[in-house]
Image 1 (cartoon, helix red, strand yellow):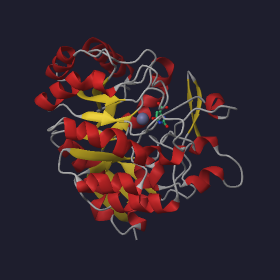
Image 2 (cartoon, rainbow, N blue to C red; image 1 turned 90 degrees about the horizontal axis):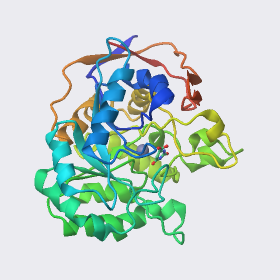
Image 3 (cartoon, rainbow, N blue to C red; image 1 turned 135 degrees about the vertical axis):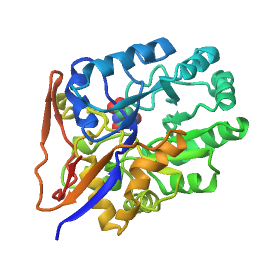
Image 4 (spheres, helix red, strand yellow; image 1 turned 90 degrees about the vertical axis):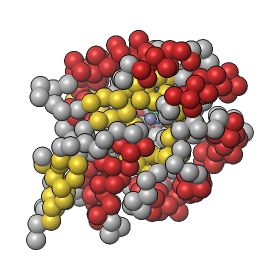
Length: 346
Ligand code: DOR
Ligand code: ZN
């Protein structure tokens, strides 16, 4: 029996598109299925000002394949020098939908991020005032804190104090990976949301480390224990408005992943929708897939849901490319470890 699902086209509320040849090579993978995406600003150098964001927006539009229907929603990279007036101007331009907080040193290209959170107080207050969301990479960088505990400690030491000190600030905890992250979002009101990635619904830390180290499963925040993966599945498939898709699809050329010091990031743009259909079917929650991919994120960002639709059809296993060839080198596509039986059409 053929099974079909008709969804509003999904939004990817956390996406790395990079720049130059990599952007050119991987943008079609997102534009094919997604209506919109929140574009991460961690380029080298980062997208810091309203002017930087407008220029990057132009480069993305120029790289879009002919006829593509895809809208990049831009973000600014928060630094200790960010000017509240520039943030307000960026929002007023209509292009910028959020500001991204990277604790300095937490992840790829985060060195220009925040060391002293007091130095960004004025910007956060302005954002609370104008209703511009803060997207947070929620991991502490204290070397004394075990990498598997960094998200939970961040909530207690950094995020909760920031939210208490800045009433009205709307925050997205990006790529949550723990039961603590899920519980914190559930305990808060509508001012706090969370993105959940495709890969964290599929892999736990054993998939990455047992039987040999699998660099293409290494990302940040790193995958945790199985009980955390199950909590993420429960949250994603719950239909609750605070949880929505942000793939964190993060391409790196293979030589930089298969390396003695490999980069963090899973490239999931290509096969996210078939993987999510598989996961939601396993959880008997196909009727809540659209909320996760196409409604809740738009709701949080106060955008109308997309008008166009996408169809997912279940049938015989469909091939997915193992790699995408880009002008910046080959990029391995995330392998979920199961056959993909859902295919996408428009
Ligand atoms: O795995 C990740 N890759 N996590 C991040 O936070 C950054 C991203 C990247 O830019 O490669
Ligand atoms: Zn990311």
